[in-house]
Structure formats: C-alpha cells, structure tokens
Length: 336
Image 1: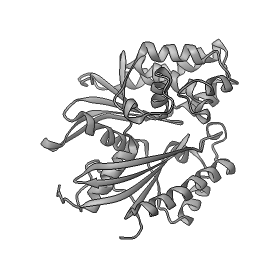
Image 2: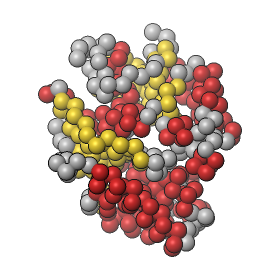
Image 3: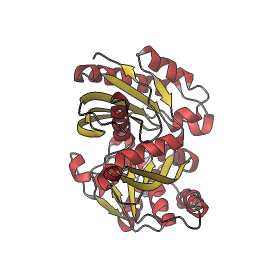
C-alpha cells in the first residue's frame, strides 16, 4: 500500500431502506481527519418487503434528499462523490426508477452486495478498535450485516471472517409482523422468535474452530436512537453516543416501554426522532435477539459506519493504493 500525505475533501452518500445519509470528510493517509454528516429519513424501503417494488413517492423523497446532498458536497469543495445503495435497492424489481434519477443528478450509483456492505462497515468501525477482534453488526431497515475480524493497520492486518448479510431489519420486521402499533403480544413474540431464528442460524453456521469475538459493536439508527432513548438525549449528542455501551437489560427495558405505545406515544419519547417512531420497536427487537443469539450481555455503539469505510476507501483510491477491503468505489468527479 502506498501512502501519500495528501489531504482530500470527499463526499459519500449511502441510500438505505430507512435513511439517506451523506458524509463530507477530509481524509489523509487512509484516515478521516474531519467530517460532518447529514441524515434524512426517507423510507425508501416502504412496502418493498410485501410488493418487491419501490413506490414513486419514496423514490422522490430520496432524490429530493440527494439534490440537497449534491449541493452540500459542491459547497464543501469535494473532489468526488461516491453513492451506494443497499438492501432495498437489491430487493426492488423497479430499482431502475431510483438509479436513473440519481444518474440525472450526476451521481454514479452502485448497488452493493451485502458482503461489500459488511466489509465497508467493518472498515469504518474498526479504526476505533485497532488490533482487537470484534464482531460488527449493522442493523438497518431491510438487512443486518455481520462481520468478525481484526484490523491492525500498523501490522498491515485486515482479516475478516463470518461476513454475512441477513434479510432482517426494522422496516422489514415492522411490515411483516406488526399489523399496528402497539403490536399484540403474539405479534411481538412472533417477531422476536423469527429474529432469533435468523441470528441463531448464523452463529450455528460458523466453523467449529471459529474464534468468537468478545466485543459486539453495533451501528445504525436503531442503536444510536436506543442510546438517545435510554439517556434521554435532547438534543442528540453524537460524541456522547459514540462508543457508549448498551446492556441487554437496557435494550429489553426499552422494548417493554415502547411495546405498550402507539406511534405518537413512541415519537413523544425523549431521544426518538418522530420519523423513526414507526420502526424503532421492531429495530430494538432485532438488536435484542442478535445479542441473545450471540450470547452478548452488552454491545458497544459506534457512530462510524459504512460511510466512514467509504470515505477511507475513496482516500485509498485517490492515493493510487489498493483498497484494503478489495472493493473499488465508483466516483463521480466534482471540481479539482
């Protein structure tokens, strides 16, 4: 790997099932030296689990967010921008509706497989845990990516195992199991049982000699919202949330609290964004069942994610280095 000390301004957009996110980052030597994020809840995956298609309104919400993101990236002075689409775009038969709209904005969208999503997220998160064997879980709206490994840049080590993308997320579970909020006791139990089955199947499928990671690191809007809910953070404070631990007890108590409330009741809870209120209960059930199936009493929440992995990977490409995660992003150029 070559190392140049050139500093770049880059932008990365990730279009997920629930949220559309932008990071504006200054990168140097494969690391982020400064960044800001902008998240819009756009619910791209609305109805996709049932119909297999995007609805036009959700595509328009995403494109409206991306128009803003492109303007912000230009104003920031980004030399290039990378755009990835994840679970919902993999599932929708009319994904071209979204992809064509993004190309009209001058973006070069890439629909990435779950395996690449897991590697990017691990790379973004692992900078904070150099040399430690961790399992990273990115639980989104339509899927949950899992990857176990060690990143030790000073030794040139990037070793990943057990990389997997499961079709389980807060939007998918909500639409599949809950007829309304609050859900019935049976609906809640069925959702938990199904989630546990998915994760137990994953852990059981790992090789006999697989070395279990002692630390579970979770990323995504569900776990960051859970920290805000548990600690009643208003306004949201990302420096407080980053690397904060959540116990299985706290996660279970949050389910208990939300499972008696309707959407308005959940939206009124301190720390919950109103637009996330409809899916946060299912998301929390997913996280609890992941912890149970993996035998984890606590998890560490990271504010870093796929976007941080993308920014670091863009840096490697601009430096002419081989990407650590063995995936090359498509870049749309702005001005030099």
